[in-house]
Each structure stands twice: as C-alpha cells, then as structure tokens.
Amino acid sequence: MITIFIRTVVLYILVVIAIRIMGKGELSELQPYELVVIIMISELASLPMETVEMPFVNGVVAISTLVFLQVIISFITLKSEKARSIICGKPNILIKKGKILDRELKRLRISMNDLIEQLRIKNFPNIDDVEFAILETNGDLSVIPKSSKRPLTPSDINLKVENEDLPIGLILDGKINQDNLNKASLNFNWLYTELKKQNIDDIDKVLYASVDKNKTLKVHFKNDK
Image (cartoon, rainbow, N blue to C red; front, side, top):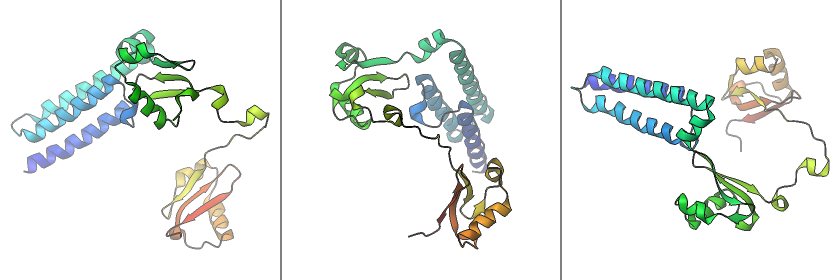
C-alpha cells in the first residue's frame, strides 16, 4: 500500500514536470506528435502504479526518454521548416477567396457539416461572409472574413488611439503581491494611500485590486453584490 502511494506521488510530480517542460497549456495547442507523447506518458505513468512488481525506475526512465525526444523534436521543428512540414504537416486552405475547396475537404475527410459547425463556433454562421478558412496544423480553424464583413477599427476612420497596457494585479484575495508592486514601480505607502482615498481600511475585504498605466487603482470587494 505504502509503495503504491509513494509511486503515485512521485509519478504525479514527474508527469507534471514533464508537461511543464513540453510548454503546452491546452490540448488544442498540441501538434499530433505532442499528443502522442502525452498519451504515452499517461500510459507509462500508470504501469508502475498498477504493477508493483515492475521496477519503478523503468517508468521514470521511459517518461524521461519521451520528454527528451519531444524536446529534441521541438527544437528540430523550430530550426528547420522542412522538418516541421514533415513532422507537423502544413496548413490546409478549405475556403479560398470565398470559394469552398471541396476537393481539399474530401482529401482531409472533412464533411460540410463539420466545416459549417466550426465556422459557427468561430462566429461565422453565414459561410458567404468568409474569405479564407484555413485548417491549422494543430487542428484549429482560422477564419478570415471578407473585407465588407470585418469589424470597423479606429484605423479605418483615421482615429488615433493610445495603446493600452495590461492592468497589474496588486491585491489578490486580501494579499498584496510584492512582485507586481515592484513591476509597477510602486510601494506600500502608495498602495495604502490609494486605499485610504477609497475608504478602505481592511485589505482582507479586497478580493482583487489592480492598477493601470495611469496609476489608477481599481478595487473589487469580497461578497460584492
């Protein structure tokens, strides 16, 4: 029992580290070969837990080898466009200049229902609004609308706007984030002064507080109704 517990904890930590090394956050971001590595890692991690007689080091070595291979392949695909096209494939155009390429759909075994469904997910219920639709190497569909259907932007009307910066979170669940405070070039005195201006005496009541590039502090309270 204790052996299984220890193996489970160690393998869990090892798999988490392996996924972190791979550097991917979501399955939708994975290339086919990376998905294969994930599946194999999960299978290899389960074997030492299911079979106590199996040497624990075998699972560790196998997982480490897979991660090493994945890192090497990623490096190769990063440096060589030809290798990337062989391993990951190339993007496929499904709609070109408003015309559906049915031959490409058949080659990729994609039905019209599948295409229409993906377009709806991308907020394009009318296929006539699409100029280009490209199936990316990770399986995601990129959609470029026709010029007449694109949202109006400030540049279209020659309107000058300032670039926005991301707000920096200073307080999260009643706790001050010292690192973000330093990033914003601020200090505790400034923060407490700004909180006082908003009649806030107890930081524990603050759920989230952030500051923008204009040094404006915005506060959200706990149990705010």
